Image (cartoon, rainbow, N blue to C red; front, side, top):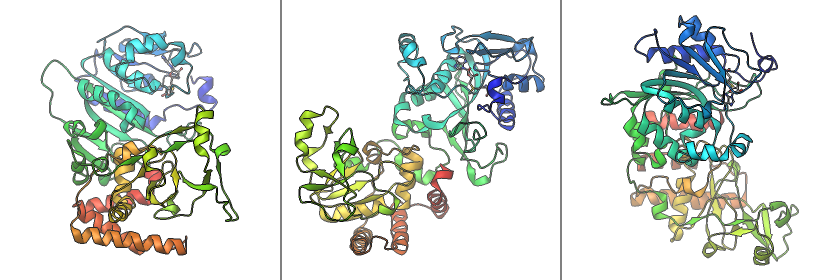
Length: 482
Ligand SMILES: C[S@@+](CC[C@H](N)C(=O)[O-])C[C@H]1O[C@@H](n2cnc3c(N)ncnc32)[C@H](O)[C@@H]1O
């Protein structure tokens, strides 16, 4: 019954998840009889088997797989070896269910082999990953009012590349539910991938019912029906239409979400800056001096501070003062925002689970991470405190970008609220003191001051106690919670 791939441990959707998805799909359909249901990437046919167990009749079930080694899941269903992305069946199905392949442009030769046809059929909505093409195609293949439940990689929720895809979903469908599936769902196989189960209904010709989306935060187990109460949120789809880049935030409290609505004031409006030098080959161009003796012709170079580097850290890398000579000789050596070079500022982390910000000392250069240059020295310390608060970490990693790559574009989207003078003073003094202490002792413990910063930022942004505890929970274990 199971394909060699499955026996070999390649990943396939776990049974409990398939059962939930099947029940969810059927609950959104008006009836079980005479519903044309498709699994477009059937593999070992686990969705088809489950639909049959649920009493669906084989003659109404359809499945595709591109792999010729795939056996028909059942002799009486309509099974075809076919590339689903190339089938021409608009408006044919009442329901679509499945687990499509997750392969990015870099991971699959499919994209280059089929460049023209993909560009023609999917170009407008964006071509990034096979799973998003499957959803796009699936929506076209649904009848108006048809329903789809898919488990896919969750990168479409916030990544800027998927902005048009999210707009497409909002325009063409009613989103019924998004669940962040357990993080290790596919760990028994080889895939280490974060996934979400999305259920949506293709908009019909009639008026859209103003139903609420059921949004479920990252689960520890496959308890999709009865997740912990604080993991569930009901939200109107219009809330997503108000978000920057139409981000799909999951279970973010409304008093935090409202800060992102419409044309809100953000850090990009009050702070200048961006990325600096991309050497194209850090190993060749950057150096570290472990013994602490730095020859005078080497300039501090900041590129990605870690969690322990928040507030202040000694430079880890240096670049030679003759770096301008490299620009002409190396095409990959690119330089942006030259006017900020050597200025005192803030340097943010760019990669890694935790987001943090540190002082960028005068006379330094910086890499492709985000670097910010407030006009007043006082503001610099204010923003240093602000960016190291838990609320900002939450806004960056939970709302603006769930991936580990934080570029300045995302940071500039952080909402800005003017603090009152006293709040601002508190934040400035804390940042100055921590920087001084960390200069003397890099492992200085900042915990007490950190909680005062957190509290002040919650007050500035008017965040309720229950939302504060959600932020704390998330920041306590971002890797697991995201
Ligand atoms: C992640 S597996 C899912 C298998 C199964 N649905 C499950 O959940 O256990 C994806 C399946 O999609 C198939 N596939 C990949 N590209 C396809 C395409 N363009 N059209 C149809 N099937 C495709 C693969 O052969 C594989 O069986």
